[in-house]
Amino acid sequence: MKTSLTLLSICVILSFSSPAFASDPDMLQDLCVADLTSPVKLNGFACKEGSLNATDFFFDGLANPGATNTTMGSVVTGANVQKIPGLNTLGVSLARIDYAPGGINPPHTHPRATEMVFVIEGEIDVGFITTADVLVAKTVKKGEVFVFPRGLVHYQRNGGGVPAAVIAAFNSQFPGTQQVAAALFAATPTVPDHVLTKAFQVGTKEVEKIKSRLAPKS
Image 1: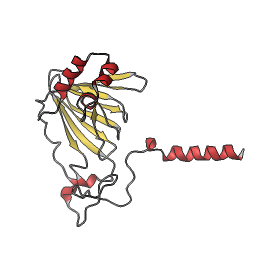
Image 2: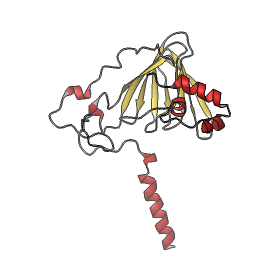
Image 3: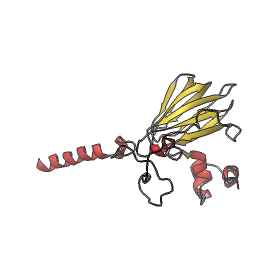
Image 4: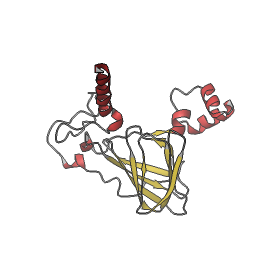
């Protein structure tokens, strides 16, 4: 009986300390403006020394649409700790995503954050895929909100004939983005062809063709 109670206590403690129940670690001071040039490596960024500066907490990069003349017809403008050093340890960030007609933000994940998008122009088709391979999809219009759970593969597409845009919010100062296709076909060093041919049930020529199209431009 005593052993069972001990095991139960350990399970309860582990469940409340698991990273799955948290976003970024809680801050231990009022603020910690990131020193992005510091050689110190830790989970986040070292705190900048010196007096406070309002510019450390300011960013105007989301005010205007980004250029959508890209391969995917979309562009992401991040407002994370790399752009706003004052976000360090605060556990939040934003991004603006602009889409040309027919443009997509291709399937990707954010390993460190849940994402919530608010449509500010046009409308977009969105979807995420659960670990049971179930697609949850919807068309989201101006003024509406949609949530992508942390870590799940998701996408957005502008299926309309006019430009569209969203503001995305994250519960992480630096949520990270991993594009599914680029991760598999444009990694350095490359993922072996025999892994990709078997995983996707295609031939080597098809794999090499995709790799050549997704290879970083020199």
